[in-house]
Length: 99
Image 1 (cartoon, rainbow, N blue to C red):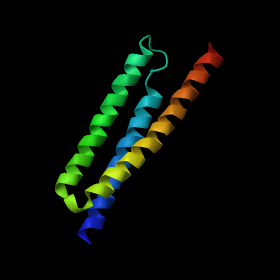
Image 2: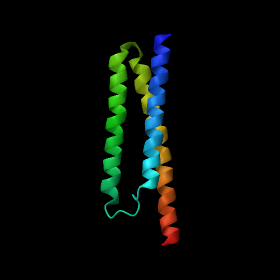
Image 3: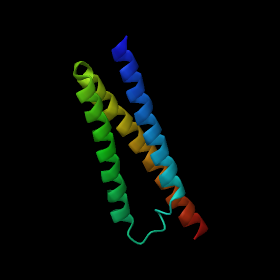
């Protein structure tokens, strides 16, 4: 079925983007930055824009599944947002421990 293939591609694209984003955040020196809040807001806005754009594209491409795309992208966004918080907190704790 065509709609299931489109939904699967949508999930894969969003999960790959989210994992790549977590990898970038883990290896960047966000915690050491003097402008920590500004950097965090910039990354958050970029993440929201990319996820929204991907979701909009798939909703435009397959309008019958738009509610499925919107809800699943929201779920993926929330899960990876919490994972990102855990990663950043771990880096903050490592920074505090190492001085």
